[in-house]
Structure formats: structure tokens, C-alpha cells
Length: 129
Image (cartoon, rainbow, N blue to C red; front, side, top):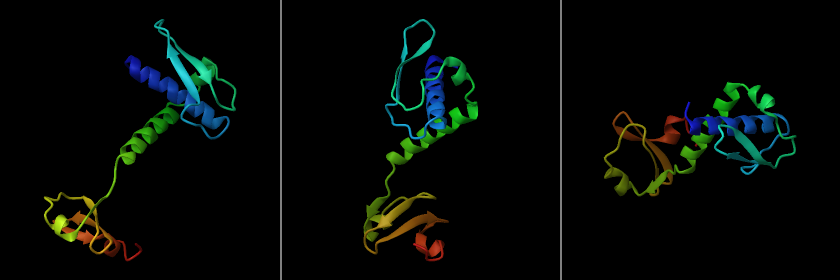
């Protein structure tokens, strides 16, 4: 494990501890620091739960750390994902790939590229959209 991964694991252990001991956690709930001595320190703790000890953080299951890492990665991916809105003419000009999704501005519907053609997503989902 490199230094960056170790630092991230420590952060996610702090976050998991805070979530399990007091609920909601803001992005700025803690600040970590590395003084270059091979140890990570909690420089500030801005949460309603007590600041954890290293022993308490060691008890945080790796599954909780991995869950938070995965949630962060998925959030970052979705944050920059946006369904593109195009006219039917623009959609027809796309060199489409399987699984692409587009919003058709001409008929105000979502389409997905499946089996070589654009399919109305509400039609695929039984009209629930």
C-alpha cells in the first residue's frame, strides 16, 4: 500500500467512525496531517462524535472503508455525467455505441442504443417513464 492509499484509508476510517457514531458527516468533518514521521494525525475534528483514537480506527472494518471509497468514486463519476440532449437529426448522425443514452429534444424522450439501434427507453421499461 502506498502513502496515498494509506492516507485515504485513514480518512475513510475516520469517516466510517463518524457516520457510525453520530450520523451525518460533512465534507469538512476532519482535517488530517502527515508530519513526515510515518504517522497520520487528525489535525481537526468537526463532528458531534468524539474524536477517535487510533485504536478505535483500527476497529473500523475494511468493508466500511471500501464501501466509502466506492461511494466516493461513484459519486465523482456521476457528478460529471450528464445525459446529452440532442435533436433527432443530431442523434441520427452519432457514431453510436452499445449502451449510449441520449435525450431526444425533438420528442422529449430518453433513448438508449441497444442491439444496433436507438430504442425509446420508456418503451423498453414498459411505459413507466
